[in-house]
Structure formats: structure tokens, C-alpha cells
Amino acid sequence: MLKKIHEKVTGSYKWTALSNTTLGVFMASLDASIVIISLPAIFRGINLNPLEPSNIGYLLWMLMGYMVCTAVLVVAFGRLGDMFGRVKMYNAGFLIFTIASIALSLTPGTGGSAAMFMIVMRMVQGIGGAFLMANSTAILTDAFPAEQRGLAMGINMIAVIAGQFIGLVVGGLLADIHWRLVFWISVPFGLFGTIWAYMKLKETGVRDRREHDWWGNLTFALGLIAILVGITYGIQPYKNHVMGWTNPNVLAELIGGILLMVGFVIVENRVSAPMFNLKLFKIRAFTAGNVAALLSSIGRGGLQFMLIIWLQGIWLPLHGYSFESTPLWAGIYMLPLTFGFLIAGPLSGHLSDRHGAKYFSTGGMLLGALAFLFLMYLPANFNYLVFSFFLFVMGIGSGLFAAPNTTAIMNSVPAKERGQASGMRATFMNSGQVLSIGLFFSLMILGLANTLPRSMSANLTREGVQPALAEQIASMPPVASLFAAFLGYNPMRQLLPESALAALPAQNAATITGKEFFPELISSPFMHGLRIAFTLSLIAYLIAAFASWLRGEKYIHEEKYVRERERENS
Image (cartoon, rainbow, N blue to C red; front, side, top):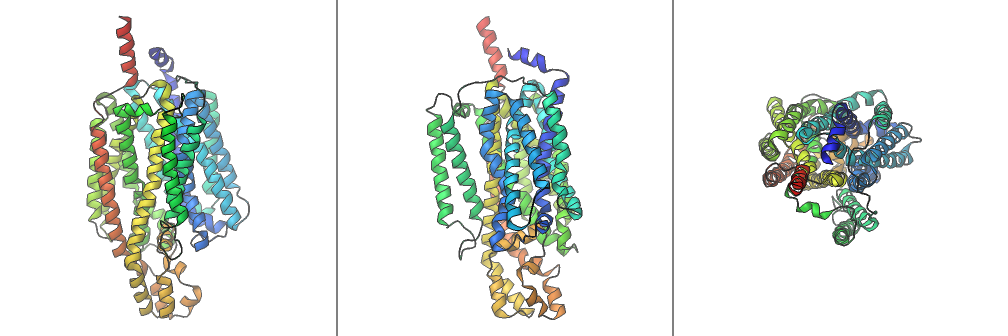
């Protein structure tokens, strides 16, 4: 039966499936990064200051709402694809994503109501993105024979990485014209891709029409939502604390989420038709690949945010760039990471079709760990050639790992369960990103809270700011400074009242709001926190390399299935 399926999809259809799914993941990836880089223009457009304590929640949910939605829903939507058809679910995702993009570009009103509308629509986009992510990999696995899947996955993942960094550059350019263009740019891609998908994609996978597991879906969704929401609010200030990890609500969400996930495992082991077949974890290649994907996502997930803050808050201002221009230039200066991935991604995918994923994925994680090691020892004001070389090495490592690991995961499962397997893989990756953001920001905020207030108070007083006001400004949660640098605002202009700056001599005010004052304040504590964060990333990559090594030799479930049937027939 499997041979007949592959005979049906050879020829031009597999390339149609690849090009359409590549467009889908490119659009989703572009939209995520273009919003990140355009947040200052978006918030200016709706007349809302995201750095005011009462508005930090809007900022965090604009950043993380999309990721939370996709992480929670991809497994359920992958299971629906197994039941009712992966192409149907994928097409629905394209349509939902496009409608949400149109709604975002037409956001009504200003202030908090506009921000809430955008957050809700970003979550709707996340629903569409979950349909796309859960089923695109499974569609590719159905369409391509085993000996070409690595190449297909490599090309598909190039679109993901390219979308992330093209979004950073394009977002910086479009935001200078008008913030609504940031959302309009996704609409032509979405309309074309939706029509194309409905016209050309066809169901070629094996369906599994078992009944729906409502209790499994409920416990998984509520548990993961609680954990990810707890992490999101954990990095916000709480009362007199710089972060919210002691907030009873955060603790209740984290503990309750863990208990619900335990309940999910119990339910899945008892129902006749589970949402996710936990027996898949008995397949060594599947388990090792997902563990490696989770750890690589944790190690890499916060990397983009940390590098952006490093560039925008320290390096670029010290090299003469205005704070307002740093978001665009940070995207440009991080392009070596993309180039490394673009070179290694399709090549490693193609070679892994012949030789298996073990050596490529293991080598990629070891190379990435080496890049983290060298990045840790760079000074805050680094030599860019050295920095770009290590970014390039990091990109090579990620490219060597991504396509072979994904292909190995998808090859290892039965054809009828590819949707849920793809969903679980995406859940591990998205959850790892949210977890890493919470972890990295927590480490950074703790490092800044220990040293920044004393240094800031002394330097502000030296420049003529009243000691009481200097102490008040210095005692503000450092998350405001980090987000100001991340968004391309001048941090000191955001922290100090305009009246306080106006009362100072012009030269002193210029010094405080200049390009050197804040970077010199933040450099030492930031680098201390960054080295701790990169050490954890290095450890995560090394464990991911070990998990990749343990996956065993090349394993393709359908070939095993065919051999077993042939032996039975003979």
C-alpha cells in the first residue's frame, strides 16, 4: 500500500506540496519577526507607551501570544489532520492566518482597546499558524519518498530561517513608512497561498478515523496554557520584586499546569483513542529526536532576543547608531547567522537522506555549543568580524541539525500518525522557545538587579540629577531598561521624566541621553548575565548532541513495515 501511495505522488505533485508548504512557513516566520522589529512603530501608531508598568502586559502578550497559541494547539491540530485529512487542516490554517492578517492591518481605535484587539488577532494568527505547522511537515513526509525527505525538509526550513531575518529587515523599512504595512505585507502571500493550496494540494496520507479524545485535548491544552502563561508573567515585576516568580498566581499556574500535564499522561494511557499515542516514545529515533529538538530550542530560543539587546542596547549605540535606528541595523548585523543556515540546511538534509541523521544532527549541536563557548568570551564592545564569524558558525550548526533531525523524527513513525508526530515536534520546539525566553530574561534581570541600581544612581547623581529622583529611577525594575533597548527606544529618555531632563544643564542632559551613557551602565552586568545564559545554552546543546547520538542508525518506519509484510508474504 505504501509503495502505491508513493507512486501516486511522484513527479510534479511533490514539488507543488514543497513550494506551497514552504510559502506557508515563510509567511508565518516572516510575520513573527516583522512584528518584533516593528513594535515601536505599532505602539506609536496606537498611541500607547508599552514601557509604562501598566502596559508591560500588552507588550509581553504581543511578543509571546502567538507562540503560546501555536505551542498549545499543534498536537491537537496534528491529530485532527490524521483523522480528517492533513491538507484540509493545512488549508484551513492558511485561510485563518490570512483573515487575521487583514484584521490586524485594519485595527480600529487607539490605546489599550487597540492593543487588546491586536493581541486577540495575533492569537487567531497563532491558531492559523498551528494548523500550518502541525500539518505542513506531515504533508511533505506523505508527498516525498524517504530518500528525498531530508532535502525537502532542508528547503522548507530555509524558508523558516530566511523569513525570520528578512522580517527583521523588511519590518524596519516598512515601519518607517506606516505601521499598518507591517501586517498588509502578509496579505498577498496569504491570499495567493490559500487559493493555491485549495486548488492544488490533495490528500495522499493515511487517515486514522478514531474517535476524538476530548479529555486528552482538555488536560493538555489547559496544562500547557497554564505553564506558558506562568512563564510569561514570571518575568514581569511583582510588588517590590523585580520579577513575578513569587507571585501566588504565577506559582498556582505553574504547579497547576504541571499537575494537568501529569493528568494528561494518565488519560492518554487509559483511553482507547488517545490524542497523542504515547507509545511513539518507545521508538528511540522519535524520542531522541524530540529531546534534541526541545533542548536545541531552549538553547537557541532566547539567543535572538539576547543578541538583539546586546546589539541595540550596547554595541550599535557605542558605534554611533541612534537608538531609533538600532532595530533595523541589528537585523542586518545578524545576517551571518542566516547565511550559515542557508548554506548548511539543504546540504545536510540531502546528505542525511543517504547517511541518516545521527552524525549531522550531533555535529550541528557540537558546532553550536562551540560557538556559544566563544561568544561568551567576547567583550561587550566586540570586534564585529569576530562576532559575525561565530554567528556564521552558529548558523552552520543549526543548519546541520534542523533538517536531518526533523526528517528522522517524521521517518520514524507510522504513516497514519504523522500529523500528531509533527504536532508534538512543533510543541517541543515552541514550548522550548517560550521557556528559554523566560529563563534567559530571568537570568538577565537578576544580574542587572544586583548591580545596575547602584551604578545608575551614582552616575545620574554625578550628572546633576537630584539624589532622591536618581534613587527612584535606579530602583525601577530593570525589565523596563531591557525592553526599552529591545524596542529601539532611548532607555534614559524613557526612564527620566522630561521635566527632570529640562532642569539639567544642556550638556548634562545630552550626556545622560547620549549614545554612551546607557551602554556603559549596562555593559558589565549584562555581560555577566549573558555568560550565564550562554553557559546554559552550551549545556543544552551538548545534551542535545548526546541525545542525537543515541538515536541510533538510519531508521525509516515505512521501510520496516514493507520488509515485514514482504517476509510475511514470502
